[in-house]
Image 1 (cartoon, rainbow, N blue to C red):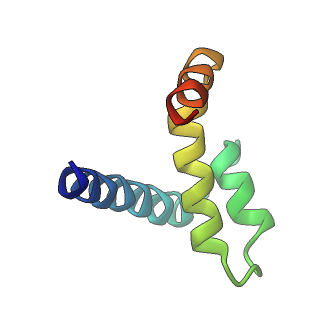
Image 2 (cartoon, one colour):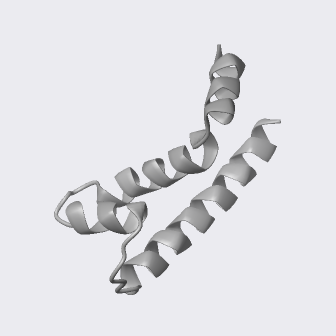
Image 3 (cartoon, rainbow, N blue to C red):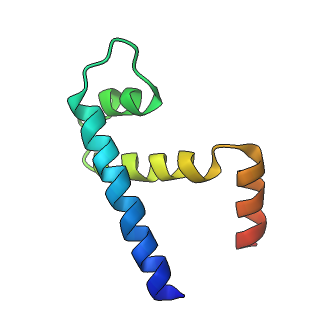
Length: 75
């Protein structure tokens, strides 16, 4: 189970890293939430870690039902 979780985490981290780098290269006139974080936190030392954690959070707990389920799962 732990190996499977570690592999899944690598896949998620790879997807998120690719999404962040793609979003950084785009110059949009109507930025979304991720683009806003990128623009606001460009000078932050832990910017990539913060962005990764934020994107994973939005992916997993973006809806109330998913957030409630995760809460009960970890409890």
